[in-house]
Length: 310
Image (tube, rainbow, N blue to C red; front, side, top):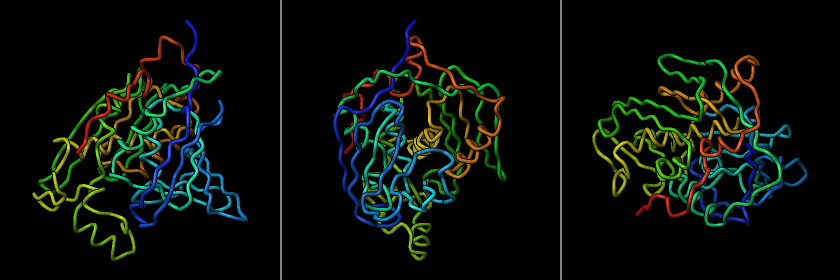
């Protein structure tokens, strides 16, 4: 039945903006890469140390607010989850991401600007098959009432539940298959969100220095403080699903399985990947066949499917 081949972007895509937590202004460029290269970051501002950082699960370092990857020389890049979700959701397997600072720019707080630029450049097929990670048995991690689980499924599905005391968010639940470009249509425009009281606390601790009402949806109680409000009624849980896809893409290959998250965050999803790869009986690496093409995130997506945003 043939094979699905790896892809990269046809030409360079560049972005400029501030990091949500550091407030540092950075320039980031996503470059095409060869087959089997994977996703790597290169800190162009680092001299005298290894500046190459692999976007892989075992390079993730502990962080409560975002996903941080770090190489053995101690060079890191933070808040990688949105660009990683965009690459995965567009079906891009290989790229070299050059960045001249410590944090990926937040842009509008979603993956939509990344997706628009990547699909605008177009994709190029490479002469190597795509290998997928097939989930064979359930794996779960938990903490208190929160949990994250991977279980067998034909394609990647994400199911997520959140429960916030703030009435502006409340309880939300969503389940979506990531097949056939649904990430681009259903999740890519959904922005990060937070409570005003959390913003105040983070800034007092020297964090969220680049956060504004334009790159995050800020709520307090039943009020939405960001102009225009939510883009979708359940934008909050959809953004958590976006984050989950970005964090799951650090597995190093597309997943064939169902992810279920309940009040899970970046650290818990990384713990789940570590638990998965500690269980050789729970997964296997397979070459994806052509008849599985529509099952993978990004397969067949078009730029005109990107949700319009104000």
